[in-house]
Length: 353
Image 1 (cartoon, helix red, strand yellow):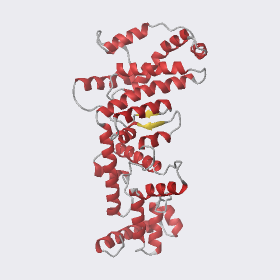
Image 2 (image 1 turned 90 degrees about the vertical axis):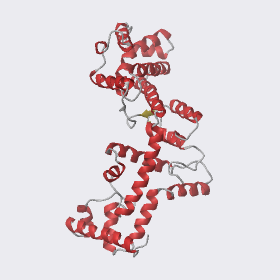
Image 3 (image 1 turned 180 degrees about the vertical axis):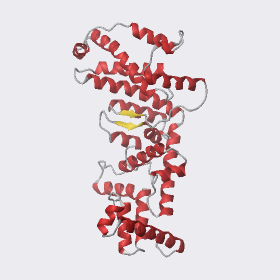
């Protein structure tokens, strides 16, 4: 079974969303990877569910623009200039963004926010209009966070304004600022995520997940231990930050594979067990434990401690030494010798596979 797919009634993306609470967020890249092979209707359903469940999108693991071209140059310029704020004088007189900024600066703001929030919660339409006008400056401020992801600043502002109006209409008089910022960010993040999907990011993310799993399992067999993130990133020729993002997606996928659903008890247990056993990590650990049977007891215990082979966190040489009654230097020497024995045993066929 592919670790990115699940045998439950809900689809993978539905499992991902159901694992979040209102106000929390999901990785945009992970969601796109799960939606990559879905029909367009499922994509629409996913974003509708995000909105109705009030779950945000974390776009930090989406790539920023790197390619050349006129549109890209504009995106890069917007990203650079927005670092210190966005002002009209940064742009040409006939630039649409400058004209919007000048219009925004000239827009009068009526009333005090707290009073407007209370009035809007009572259904006062004029108060809602005034509250929305007051919030446009916040839209501009938040838009700076999303520059460079493939959506032009003016489009981000437009999407954020829709989110602002959503917040104004949901206003119940409490926690308005948090609600306002959530919906502004949600609509901007949605635009960025859909643009990333159009650029093929979902396909790249899914391929990255598969490549990561293959390298992880291969290095485990070659090294006789769980490979480090740095070793995996080097094999994949990617930045450490990108490898970390992929590892987090896989961790989420493994957790979701173990989520219980309302099925018959026996069927539920079989389904969950199958999901766990099909993961590369489980298979790899089982293989390592089998290999340890060819070592003496102290060597096996040391490797178990050092690499967390019984589900516990790995320990440093100092801690392993304390538990085994030897020095940290002796731990490292014994570890090196035990790993060499495992590798030689694999080559010679003297250890079980």
